[in-house]
Length: 154
Ligand code: FES
Ligand code: FES
Image 1 (cartoon, rainbow, N blue to C red):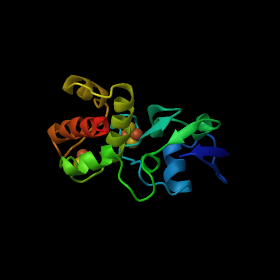
Image 2 (cartoon, protein in one colour):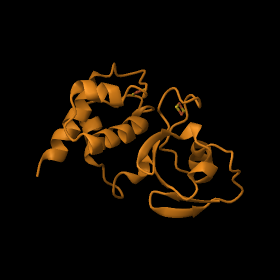
Image 3 (cartoon, rainbow, N blue to C red):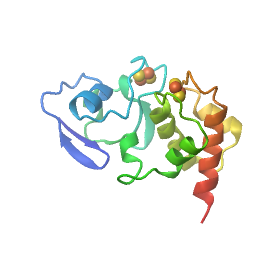
Image 4 (tube, rainbow, N blue to C red):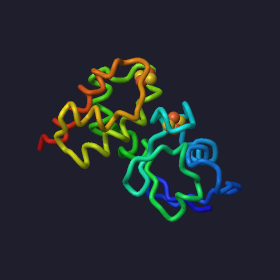
């Protein structure tokens, strides 16, 4: 099976088409950014972009991702750099244990692509499928607003 992940074609030896995309990303490609928490599409910690749209990688069969573009949290920023969304999460104190953070960052990327200056309600709606057990969400909302402001600056 060949999967295009973060702009690179990967030949994935021994993968079965029915294995979840999340399993293949983590266990066969060593991309541990996408987190495995519920494996039932309930928590959003495994969120990746599939042809630009956010999906729960635990609910997508790897075979369904063949011939499509997968982008994980590792692929959002240039090598060694934090992108504005990631930096905003750190600066706003929106990262505690960090388990939910990659999924939230991917989801926030999608929101800011669609809505460069989202309202708090729009952020809440966009992130409704991403659960965080640590932060109480207020700092996450702050982070997305902060990222929007930073992206808007020339
Ligand atoms: S691990 Fe995929 S939604 Fe929870
Ligand atoms: S920071 Fe711990 S689950 Fe969100």
